[in-house]
Image 1: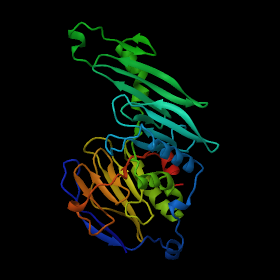
Image 2: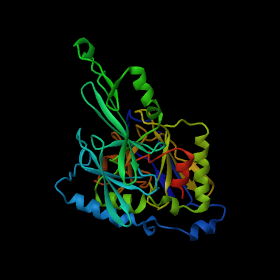
Image 3: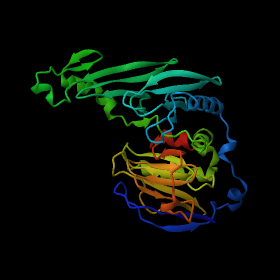
Image 4: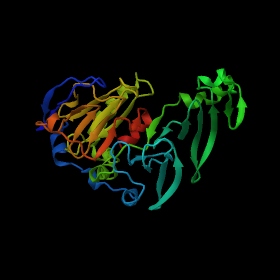
Length: 355
């Protein structure tokens, strides 16, 4: 039996209804298909896996590594070159001017692409295949949009704006708007950036901590779920995501993640990035697809302890893996992943994620 149970503390960060339910182990109408054919994500290999794992181990042994699970070192796997192969992004810490270090695997070799971002993260615009590298200071913004071209990053457009300081005008400071180093008027400034500002973005850089279990999940499992699913299961998840496509805005995102240690991923759908936004979780049954009752997380994501299979949002914790889970007994491990917003919800990403 596949048992799901939720146990939690109250939290203003999200709304969650407590429910207990069970279902038969995943089946389709052809029960023998699901019972006799099962692929472990660990059995699926990519040429970049060992290359990235070696780099992560090297960094973890370096003086730049910080073990603090909140403000210390984290990493991410995220395709920013448009070839559907993830880059390795290492975030040394979340200090204000800390940039992410970006690596790619080319011909089975690690290649350093450069650094970008601030506070250990950067924004990526998947629809435009651009990195948004922006720094906000005391009353000013300096930023640029960068694309990957022919093995290097090239600036597409740069901008700056010192108008945010409430003291600028009253203190006699000259308010300036600049595009590509040239001063422009506000209407021209807004027009030049409108296309970029309207494109949905995902934060990248700090998805995983450096615990051994989190390292293994990220490198050996997180990119393999589409191949793990049987064709009938892919069809079920595709149908559900396509349902959302017809009525949802561009801020929706989704992710596949095994939340109950049976090596069959659940489908997580995130409805935005504000505090009140949450995730919905779906799982496969012999009758098709079922939704776990409740609204999970905050800011459209939740923290997942990959070692103990515990989900968290703020001060709330719950498990769909352990029917005897006790909030009082839970002690967070150093194996954490931020779950919910791996892919923006669009047709292209549905295909990428489920194949």
